[in-house]
Length: 149
Image 1 (tube, rainbow, N blue to C red):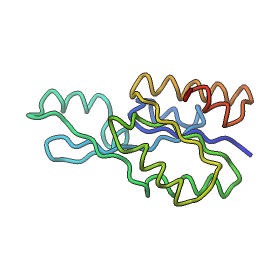
Image 2 (cartoon, one colour; image 1 turned 45 degrees about the vertical axis):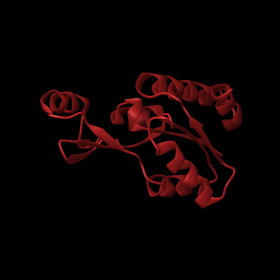
Image 3 (cartoon, rainbow, N blue to C red; image 1 turned 180 degrees about the vertical axis):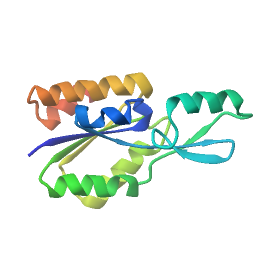
């Protein structure tokens, strides 16, 4: 049984680092001047800042919907793995709630979700701590408990 760590693109962890870190990154959508981009896939950081500078209005984001988590969660749970999901603050996005809905749809106790109550660098720090704990052989539950108490 493996522990699978999943986060969202607001962690600003580069998609190119997913394999070496052994994590999955689920992208949010970013809307700039009415055009929708998939964060980290068809909108890179440099492009985002360039568009931000030129944009007439501040960009908005669109949360990951439950379907965005469902297949990924199912794949890992059906393989006998545990999932640790660490996501953007529920005060800033509905992404964490979408992950909770997907977990409920699957109906398993092998998915552990964390509302990071932060984003970007703070979220990334929690993900890196989970990676470190996993490498040290910690179980999924203590991995979570260290960040939610």
